[in-house]
Every structure is written in C-alpha cells, then in structure tokens.
Image (cartoon, rainbow, N blue to C red; front, side, top):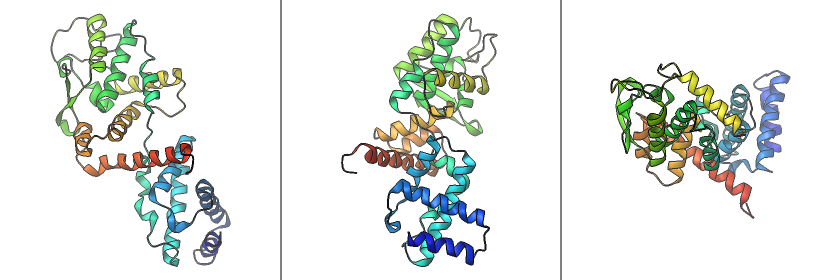
Length: 287
C-alpha cells in the first residue's frame, strides 16, 4: 500500500510523532483497508467509513477507541487530499465529538419483537413494562418524556408529549401500544384520582423514573439474548430508522421525534445508507 507507506513517512518526518502514535495510525488505517478489501482510496465513500465504524461499535469497541480510529482516518484522508490521491477530503464529513450520533444502535425488527415479548402481562410489573416498551417503540419519544406522561396524555390514536423546553407535540400511536397501555391501566394501575396522575408508577405508586426504566430495558434485552447494547434510547433510534426504511418522510419523523433542527434527524439517512450497504455486502451473491 504505497499511500500508507507515504503517510507513515509523512507522520514521522513532517509531524515528528512518536513511534507508538505512528504505529496506532498505521494499525487503524490497515484495519479499515482490511475491512474494505484491497481498497482504491479514491473510490472510498462516507458510507464505507460509516459501515466500518458501525462494525466496530457492534463488536463492542470502546467509544474512545472508535473516536481514535476515526481521527486516524480523518488525518489519513486529509493527507491523501493534500497529495492529490483523492479529489475531496472524506474525513471532513465527520465531526469526531458527534460520532455516536452518527452511528446510533438500532435493533432489527425481529429483535424489537423479541424484546417487546419479554415482559409478562399477567404480572402487574410485567404489564407496566410491556406498555412502556410498546409505547417507546411506537412513538420514538424520549424516556424522560415517557416518565412525565400523565393518565390522559394517552388517547385512542395519539399521545401528547411534553418535550424539551416544555414544548408539546402530538404523536400518532398504533393499536398494539394502546392495547398494552389499556391492559396495564384496567388490570393493575389502581385508582386514578386526577387526570394529571402519572401514567407509569412504581410498586409504591410513585412516578417512575428514567433509571428504573433503563434497568428494566437492560433486563429484558439480556433475557431476550440480544447481544447489542440496548437502552431506552435504542428504541427511539429504531423507531426513526424503521420509519425511514419504510418510506416515511424525513420531516414527519422530525416532528414526531421533536427535533428542532432537520440536520439532527438527517443522521438517520446516514445510518440507513450504512445498514443497506452492509446488507448488500453480506447477502448479495456478487457484492
């Protein structure tokens, strides 16, 4: 790999980096090259980089390690642009501090079904947790927004959510989620005195908090045998990605997620493109 050899010489001669640092850069670029398979650097795309980073994340690489590898690739592609080997600086596309926003964890549809089937609806806590999981995935709301829901915020076809800055929005909600909420309310919620009463409560009747939901989601993901790192936010990411893959308009997804900036929602187009590329490489007979 002539370009890599010249890059290493550049780091040593012009940048004066330590041998350990140079070795780390070399390892990272080689790892990316191995992932691509005999790459022609001028043909590498941002989707290739995203696919590689997603692979690292799925393999449980630490966030610090992934960010370091991204820095290595950014420096490498900046060097290639400077030398005229590529027409554009591919690394400029990626902002290192926001890397985890670019590659959020997303569950496959089968994994979502498996996760949502874990709580036992014949048990009070199971019925509550079933309703929570169904509602998180059905609406894509933040876990903090779910915790703040009151009894009458959930209607037959929509849920009223108070988001950041106390801004309210209305999100359509499907039948399965409503059925799960109804079963929880009718069988186990207990007496409701005021319409502002919290929707989801603990055994003691207190409003549920984010940490308890986080622990329950982790518990059910482990019980389901899901190997990915799963949190309540994973269901939000999955909601948005699955809608986009199904053909939903990005502006509608933005409204449902409560994003002020369309650029925040736009990250899902990169994730979807990356997932499609991986699927093509893995399953197409002539990738």
